[in-house]
Length: 292
Ligand code: GLU
View 1 (cartoon, rainbow, N blue to C red):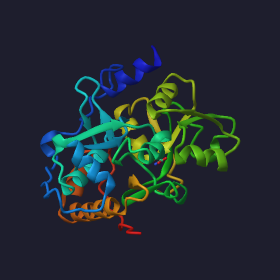
View 2: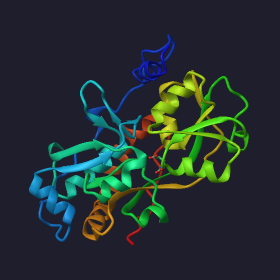
View 3: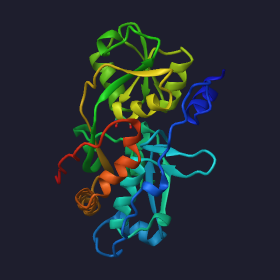
View 4: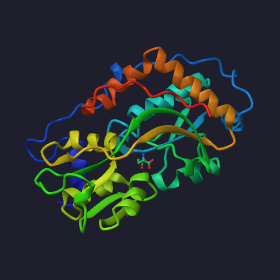
């Protein structure tokens, strides 16, 4: 079977007999977010541009089950990150029909924010000091950790210490890619644009492991539990932030406020349970917001 086709079949639940149909986000279970008056936030260049354009452009990922996923047939995006993007938009005065989602690969996020291609970015985006030199971060709104995904038949890989000489795949430009390069130089690291390309190659036997955040890997594993398993425990801390243009402090603080409000009023938990919670991880407490 062709690798690309293999993943499509797994993710749509029509793969090998025995692959269970896994529920996607149930639209009825998602909260709807009250749209605030549009002019409350002033002094944000990105927001001024969005108002002039008539809609927001939000950068996201499109191949991460339960986090940010685009339905290939309808073009509709869903997942926890998509809900976070909608919560922020509502508080900035934009109803869901005034958000245009744009898929931006992990390696291209900083550039997309720097050149105004997107107004903000919500897609498993780890906050760290290097990136803070280039972009701003509201949040964090969730904390993940780097983990490994392997074939269920593989009993030998149970943590990063077992990667010596093994082919491990991750997305170029991601923090998990950089960590393997630096801390596990004996692994044979392969970088692709997307994690779904890595998972295709794992299923077809061309790589031995996929590494990225547990939140992402758990989604792939939940969609193909007969074929894939998470190996070992998370071995890093990945606090997720909403990426903003670096100097747009007004936008960053307004999104911090939005996150805090939706965490307090129960929307955050409800959105989590209708999306990422379906991959099997119970809702944690949201982490404290860092208003720097
Ligand atoms: N959270 C990690 C990062 O920001 C990995 C996930 C991703 O590539 O989006 O690099």
